[in-house]
Each structure stands twice: as structure tokens, then as C-alpha cells.
Length: 226
Image 1 (cartoon, one colour):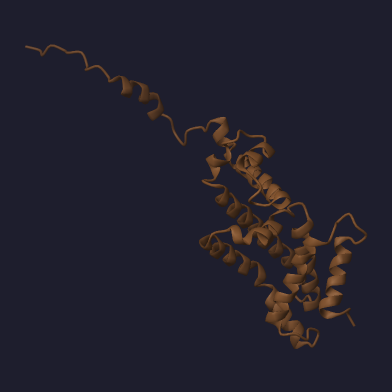
Image 2: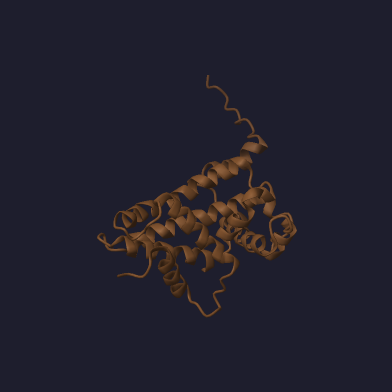
């Protein structure tokens, strides 16, 4: 005698709704807002850098930043847990860009480029990061260093060390050749301090171009080429 056929048990509603998704291959498509997250984050960082430099960290509210980025007032908190975390991101972003671009500048020099030429490239690039298209980032670090927490300062200090590391071999070579009279380690601090202080007085729209400014700085540090 054959066994009577029975109907299959009903599929739970949740399984029925999930079944089409289970058959999809690969990663699910992101919603439009989710796909734009990276761009939104960059826009927030750039807007914050501009405002932190112009108004100061304490005087800038997240509402100001959101308005500058053309977003709702709470949008920055979707990407950053606090205004302080955003400040850290601004400084970190600026330094990482500076390190990457400095490496590109040095790689474009001839392998046997003399130390004077390498120092000239380093100085000119430093002025570019202070006054170029991304010129808000590093001044924010200079102005707002104390607003960072100790762990944030430690992480920034490591990136800062990566940026400053290529300067030492150049200064040591200049010192060995007699072109630099000061101790290289002290000279690096003096030079970086002088370059960074230029954000207080130099105006790109003035009579000196960045090239002319860099040439004047080199004359001050090591004198004109002989």
C-alpha cells in the first residue's frame, strides 16, 4: 500500500522574506547615502579644517561645521563621536597628506641630487602644505595642539616623525660639507619653527611668491649657493 503524500510544512514568513536575499551573490548594494559616506566624511574634515583655522577649535561648533558642509546639524556625529575626534581626524589627515606628498617630491629628484637641492625641495614643499590648496590642515595642528588628548598627540607625533625624518640626512650632509654651521638636530628644529611661523605673517597674495619665499628661506639657512 502506498504512503499517502502530505503537503510540505508551511515556510515561516521570515524565511520566505529572506529566501530571495539568500540567493543573491556578492555584497549587497549600498543605499545611496551609504555609498556617499566617504565623500561626506572628507567634506566634514575639510569644512572643519577651514573653520578651526579661521575661528579656532573652541569657537567652532558642530552646527557650524555641518552648515559649512551643507548637512544637517547632527550629521558630523554619524562619522565622528565628538568634536575632539574630528579635530584629531583633521590633523591626522593633514599630516598624512603631507608625508605622502613629500615622498613624491623627493622621489622626483635625481638620485644624485646634492643636499642643497634636496633641502630646497623640502622647504618649497613645506610652504606648499602651509599655503597651498590644503593649507588649513597643518596650521590647525600648530594652533590647536593643546586641544588634542595625550593619546591623540602621541599618534600625531608618530606621523610627524615620519614627515621630519627625511630632513635629517639632508641637514647632516650639509653640515658635513660645511654648508650648515649649526648642529643638524638643532637646525631642524630651528628651520621647522621658522617655516611654521610664516603662517602668522606671510600672505600668498603679497609681493613674494612661494618660490621666492623658499629661496629667501634657503639663503637664511645655508646662504646662497657658491
